[in-house]
Length: 122
Image (tube, rainbow, N blue to C red; front, side):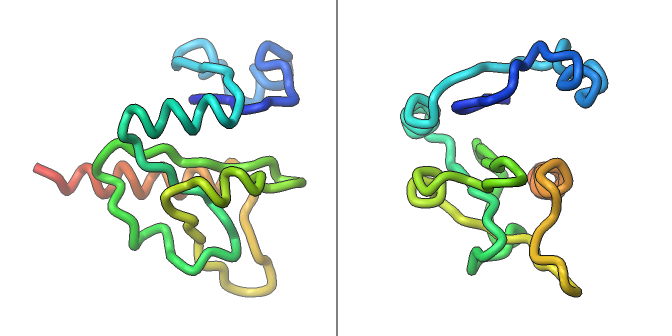
């Protein structure tokens, strides 16, 4: 996980509690948005920005190769930089009156799709 331009201390007890301690068992890096975009591009990793108004659905994107799933803060969403520089802007179809999911649920849906696609790959 890469936290870009973060506004929260990753060692804050609330962050640790919300992660259920997972923060201690997975690699976490902190970088600026520009540093992260440059690194992803140099590594050949495609980026998928989760955007409620996207024209392409997340299931229509091939996630079998290196893929960065980009989600923004619940109150502000993704910056224009991410929206404009990501290889894909993907939406999760919503039914009813809600126009989006909370960030952790959206991330989980997108991550599960990447896992589902990769399980089908021999």
